[in-house]
Image 1: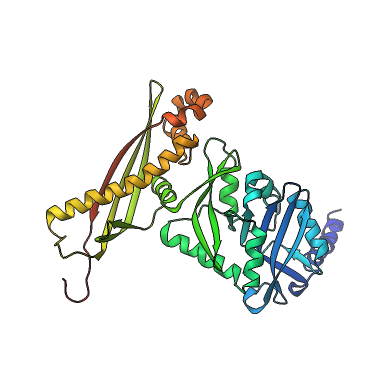
Image 2 (image 1 turned 90 degrees about the vertical axis):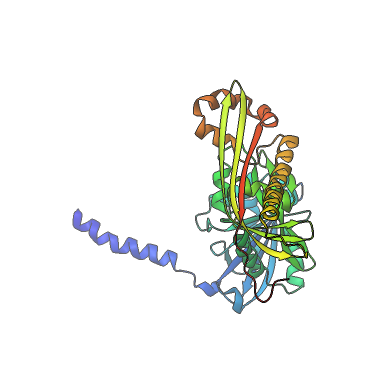
Length: 363
């Protein structure tokens, strides 16, 4: 019996090997960007893929194919039927979700993807603000833009400002497991043949609720401790660059009152001086330090005001309370949506202006 089993194994392995390699790479169209739209009746997928280049998008022209269905999965199957060659999401690095699809619910958009074993979990998801994903992709191709390369540059550009990108498939699927805090996804603005990240799309119960502008989004990033650098403009006289930031959140629940202490420490460098006044005196540096602290506080205040007016937890405070005040969270959890507007925020912002290097003579 053992011998029979051993004899069968090579045949089984050969069968698997044949199945996995029955298609050469030039027989498959690699989708690089997938757009997902909702019309109110069905979903439309727009797939940007290489023509005759296999996995190498740079050595091939790109084209778009579209198909619709009652669900994303059905639309994808129709996409496969419509295309001459087989298609795969194995090389898809970017998923663009149109505004209407986002309003209908990102769970409907991402469920099929979460069950496809071939997708890359580190792929990025963006919301196309005020337009459909298909419009962005079609215009991009018509204007001969290298869309997948532009999106790659955009994701890398994010890391110049932030310490990490949270808008991956894996990150969003993890966020969808909880229901107390809002999901934030970068909103993509297509304007004048270029792509621009303009803040966040804010979701309430997995449906698009509103957008945060760039300044308000940066306030959220400071609270979440993911800021790598941030420019500060003190009127039109002094420009600074924030670096080495560190944020700590501490929650406290006492007699039903929830207090959130936001402690931020950061350094900044002077990048521009447009005044004849000597700003390097102790008094002037103290004044600038106070101004930059208020600048950061104002950004966070904008985010807090949005949270209060929308009654949405955009900072992930619920998870912090659950971790830091587990016993009190059991009492606060049932009425959490009612408590968001009544959160008490306390600021502790400290900073210093580091040495600024100059080339040439000072004024």
